[in-house]
Image (cartoon, rainbow, N blue to C red):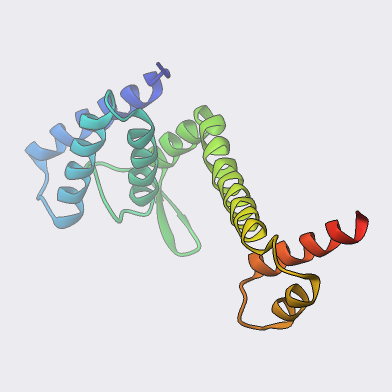
Length: 164
């Protein structure tokens, strides 16, 4: 099982500030959204740890510019005319740093799946076109109706036939 220690620490701190703020804070829509987000992230941490980590990152990102809030007491820095929450920015940076490998895997898996998907489609078109004569393949290739994967499959078939 993947370690989820940093997420638990951040969630505990966020819950402490949220509970403290419930006593002393007027509850607005941003605060309610933050509480719902914390409930979702906390309830998913053991069952779906990756989802919980991504969701917590999203919550922290939104809380940096106060689209959602967890606390009535916040420390800000003014940059580019926008207040940035220092505490949530720090939590976000720590979580990104600690989970950088997971984020890289997520980013690279999307591009790998896309390449595999394209290769599978090209193979499918190659199987479909393999019994057609060269002249018919060339006519199909010049047809603007075909998708790029089909054209690539035709090009590969014609190249293979020329080499053999």
